[in-house]
Length: 83
Image (cartoon, rainbow, N blue to C red):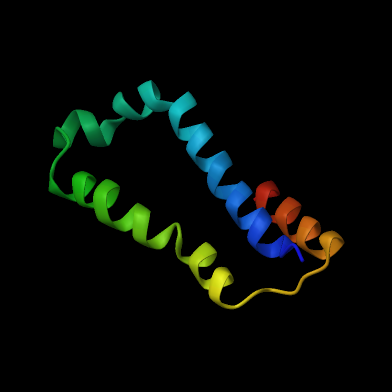
């Protein structure tokens, strides 16, 4: 049985990574990188915060299946992508 909540959580992470790599040069030219020169906070965020926090919902859903129907999971996904 497919857990649609987990599926759309993984899809949202995939889309986040695709967006990052498409905009990578823009991020490297941002004011944070220019001013801080890839300082401690930026490095800590990239190496610790993003991998730990951005994957938390998927790790939680693996251990606690959502049980959402396809339609409900899709509606939540579309709402979250809309902002």
